[in-house]
Length: 243
Ligand SMILES: Nc1ncnc2c1ncn2[C@@H]1O[C@H](COP(=O)(O)OP(=O)(O)OP(=O)(O)O)[C@@H](O)[C@H]1O
Ligand SMILES: [Mg+2]
Image 1 (cartoon, rainbow, N blue to C red):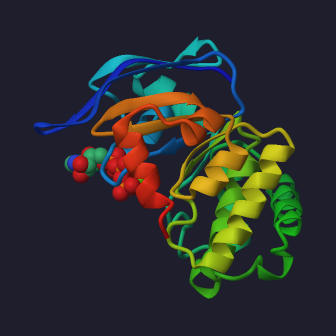
Image 2 (cartoon, rainbow, N blue to C red):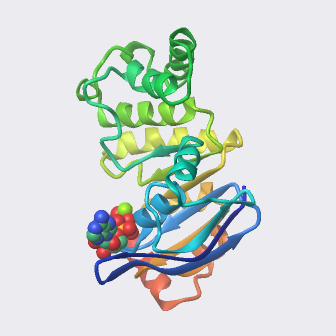
């Protein structure tokens, strides 16, 4: 996929969460967004996903300019499979209904077709016996797998993942990262904020280091991890790789 950001700025009061970000990636498959807490990763992913409108700047995906009017944003959002840090699912719906509801209500699937699609995805992610459970009856890892299944159900142009494992213990983290790695190997494009540097390094072909609302470093993942240029990134990697 292609991504171009030009002068993307987002302010919350006097704070510039994104301070004129520019980036041009003509062709990539997986972009890892790394950086310290509060640096702007989530805000950036929300702008890319059409969930936050920037105060200034331009966004281009697959050589199409994304308009920031309500209508364009809605169309844009519907084409992306989004998975957030935690609590993605509707708590009052079963795992199966969490997948069928958006398919029916947003994407115009007939109930039978939505159900067939949802069942196939639950089977694929080893969740068949959990389809009738509510999120509270599922483990955190299972919940995130349902969230990924739901994101995949709409056949998105790419997946947008914001620290999908941050609320999980190590075993469930591995389970969810395995699935994301598998989707990547199947050729699914993705943009993902993660604190798992080892995973970012193996799965991503491109990486950006977002810090203080700026892209402090950008390039092939192997270069950012193998040969960090800035003091900031060297310090960050030293800290995150310490434990
Ligand atoms: N809705 C909001 N209202 C006010 N300030 C916000 C809002 N969302 C984010 N911020 C601020 O913008 C900055 C960037 O936040 P953001 O969530 O993008 O960071 P992050 O890199 O995703 O951090 P983390 O790794 O902790 O998830 C932070 O200082 C945060 O407090
Ligand atoms: Mg965040």
